[in-house]
Image 1 (cartoon, rainbow, N blue to C red):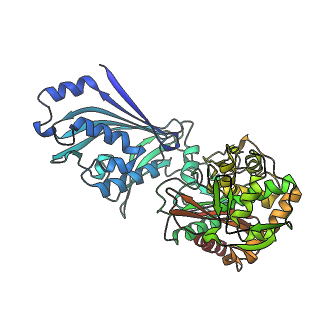
Image 2 (cartoon, helix red, strand yellow):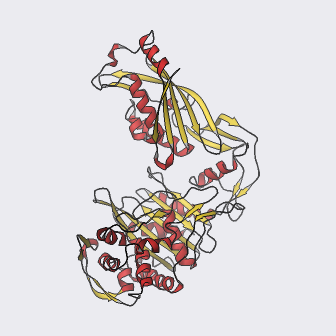
Image 3 (cartoon, one colour):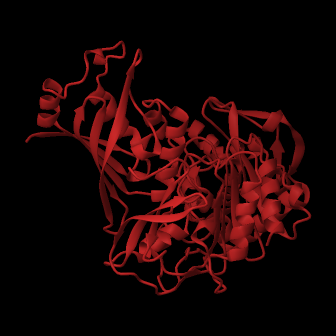
Length: 513
């Protein structure tokens, strides 16, 4: 029997394969199980075409998959929830046959660590004037899934007990971006794992189980108190919000949180323009080049034209000539664009590397992506990068690592699972001590008299605000990245259009510690 396989590459590297069994498909369509004559519609798509497109988009693009159903809202919500809860490395959906108003599909989830879950599901189909649609209920994902149910991957009988850095038991739901992956890490090597259906107010049902249970306790670097404070802070925001906290002295990951309004990307790997938080890097590059120091008098006009690029300050504010440390505290875009225009094209990439933004780590239990900063390809790109726009990218994890480096005065290696050391794939060296000392003073002034005075009552906080435009430039994300004592952190509010909400979220987080 011949097969025709189509492959789609998903965000994060996952792949979905929709394999159409050609012989069976053709025979069924041409025999007693052929689709009705009404399959020819204005959409130009027969039932097999629609199911194939639906399966291709199932994991890759839940919005696109939902659009091919007769209940878009329920399908989108369910498919997004399944994608997040299973965190599969790959989904293979094999279309066996389309007969009448149903399609038989074999589903194969690769859940990592050699764990594979197979089952068959029948997709009911409907036809109307707009063409064929998948008749969606949660049972279209798995035959036993009902309305309001969710799927979860477990190790053994609920997985090995997990404790925080202080030895306190942690519920995996308290850190959903971290603890499930720790449990999957412990689920390899033939140890027990299962997929369960969690029913609202009705307990759990095991849908699949394999292997021998491992009940050996595991301890992680997370602080239960910091994790709870981080989650409460992002949950209190009106829009999508993320927060990552790292202990500078040890590299321990203390908290990773985001709220349910985040539907694209995550705090550990999502790549975003860092906006003016990147002025920490630009300032370091200028200071290290030696042309200026923190007290050098610089200009802060409302706009500045550098080559073919005009750089404005926020609302085109302007200030009289002032020391560099004050231009940093007030976030003068024009000042830092002018400084960057005088630096070599690779200066910002080299400086970013000194803060870990181009570093790479193999952290047991975590997948992370700090950022990506490359040498500027043009003068325009250089001045855009200076203010954290253009091609510069960073994750909330990456900016927490950046501020942890400032606080520690050395390269920081993130750690999560006790007894399992991080492998440094691409390492880095921190900037010189004199540069870091100047940066600390400048970052403190941001809070005492600059753009983050909303944190003035939160203790001795150091940091930098940022806003970064995205899309067509009419919207912007809001950032704050900084540290207090031995806690470095970054906060990102998507679409906030200002850094002030990120500052407020930071204050809430610090208040909960």
